[in-house]
Length: 383
Image (tube, rainbow, N blue to C red; front, side, top):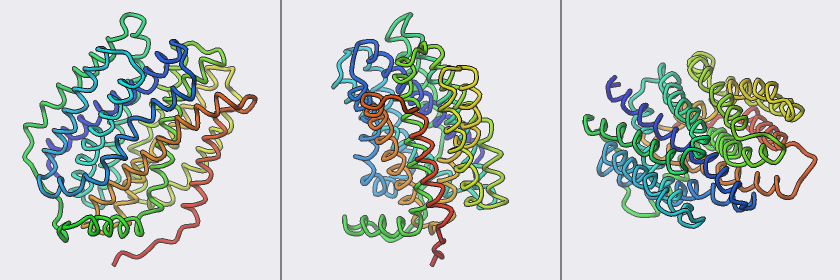
């Protein structure tokens, strides 16, 4: 795989991670301080993932027709414009629309970069390359919540910084030479597209579960936990540090776990991290009043389950025929979005209507269910 292209692609993903990691806690805190209910706060956070879901079925034909580069450039441009428009008008529905646009742009950006990397990586380096992709997204995502305290200087400042960084990274895309995915049967109708989705799903459905789980985990932690944390007496800085602790844990172990999965197999590593990740979140539920203890626990949880999305993509690539990889990558994006939609909304309902039970127990149970699904799955042989 072309080295320069690889590092440009993962850098783009890092900036995208930064904007996503910033938006979830930032807007949650702004709306919470404005007195918006936890359920409506969670509903607004789902806009990004609704955008991802809306555009997903239409992503593959343009990619096959125009190649990777134009799709990533258009996605990046949509994200930059939406971020720049946030300070213009603070309104629930206007911000909902902008987050929807960011979801559409992010999906194009991630679908293009993911498919380009998975399609051009040799099998013995696949886990490593996707883990580096995950590390860069994680670094960006970890830096994002640190922008939240900047609202006390000026509410528009985090949006301006994020849009500027995205613009700088986006300009590097023009130095890349366009490429196309491996040719397969031409998509001549909606029925052909639906048939490819069904076929790819039959091979890779179990590998989509880590993406669902990671979407639920990431969106509920970054979208609902800031509200939960403020309501149990934490300050904004403590909430930001706790979110960064989880993200840094994911960054530290992303590459070692990816390389280990190349040697030991994706299924073994996934079942291990899901089981122990579930236990760690269970323990976190007893440490809510101890910020240091909770920070350590979330760091360990990040080390374990922070790699579920990148390992899920590698697992999907192992299970899916190469001609169906673009479709498989779309399904990963859809799975991540489904989890991300469920996370903040269910988190908001939980915070508003259930008291006396820790928020972390919901995450622990979700990880345990996915562990059992993967542990008892029998692999379908690629034809």
